[in-house]
Length: 281
Image (cartoon, rainbow, N blue to C red; front, side, top):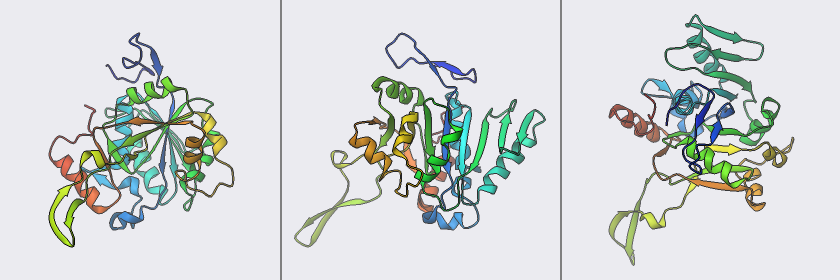
């Protein structure tokens, strides 16, 4: 499949008829959290600016989406959001062919040797929960399908297949269901005696929410203006109860970046020269 910046791609993962799937849609990235479990880094910078291989994790996520042709990003800012705007605005300002509109915090990079992104930064509040940030973005989203993720990790998920799956079921929401990394050994105990420590068997592993959502505008009916319940515990659960939430099962690489240990894992992948999520050229 050829990926480019043309605004559409040929989807080879649907019914085999080569259905055109528009990628001229918005990608929402929630980038406003404090990142308290990564305090070693986030005391001085927001979590999206924590670096892997010398580049912020947000940069890696943007590269992933733009590899599949997605160029239009709405980035919800909060904690230390000025660091994020400064990084991207200063970086783009070094290129002669650019547009910056400070009134709306909109950055358009027309002709960069590295990437071509349209970035819109929206301040959604320092202390806002995910649900609140999502609701505050509603005026900036058209009445069309949009994608959403956050700056908690990286993956090699095929976004063509994710979108094709979402289009196929006709529900309001799709989340990507992943297996969490194996962190702990499984204790084999007889009485009080430990006789072995093994990795948790694959058959006993449970999938978790890996983000990488595809959403319809109807999801805003599940998010009230005064909602103070987290996205996972409120809107997502209610979507599930109404049979409007589907799982796209991703079995390949997914790695969160919740702690310093997770960051070191990702750095080691990068330094190996073949990080699994680096699917772009």
